[in-house]
Length: 282
Ligand code: ADP
Image (tube, rainbow, N blue to C red; front, side):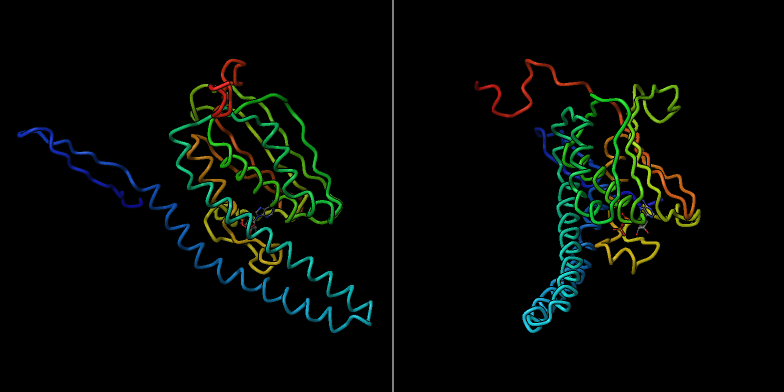
């Protein structure tokens, strides 16, 4: 087991009493370690596409009278730009995971909106590979938690499904509601299940145990080519756990994978409870 990290604060309460506050810092330390590793890795990872873009743009200028070469260089610039975009996305995700507001101010989060956002996030990559993303299941479901974190988690799953699938395949996002009896032991009350199924390369049994570790990539070269950092699934796992949920994977190598998150259900916001912070004044 990992050692427990605690912070201890002592405050005097009069002459004979002290208040001792012991706070579990393990999770905070873990997130902090991820952030530090990420910063070290990312500075290296960012330099590669930026350097390539700079060289390629010079090459385009030099080759201006050779339309075929210009086409080729422009194509490679698109790949590098996509890689840069997805690295930036991971930086945003990581900063959202560190957002402590989850504990202070959880809110109802519409699953339909999370799905729409996740699809939107990889619209370009999906279109380039002619991958169809379809969402089905129950509409109008709500979760309870931090919107930004949940969006980062689902976004990562859909993005992976697109990245690790061949062209002209399908990605299916499905939602359902399960009672705690069906979820046996995972949580009290109702759970919402969101699954993302692809027809991609799949993950071997040996790798399935490790893909949720930070920086673990089955094929580092392939992952890097799509802008992967090996952090996406560790972010998903962190978000699921901090919301009292789980994430799991089912896969057949060469046929595809299904990633499933189960999270405690939330309540739809009521009419007289405005969901923006200025609501009270109007
Ligand atoms: P990355 O940034 O490399 O995508 P992730 O943490 O999101 O990092 O995923 C870790 C590794 O798990 C990936 O590098 C890839 O090898 C594998 N993986 C993740 N999602 C899928 C998927 N849908 N199909 C096949 N392999 C996947």
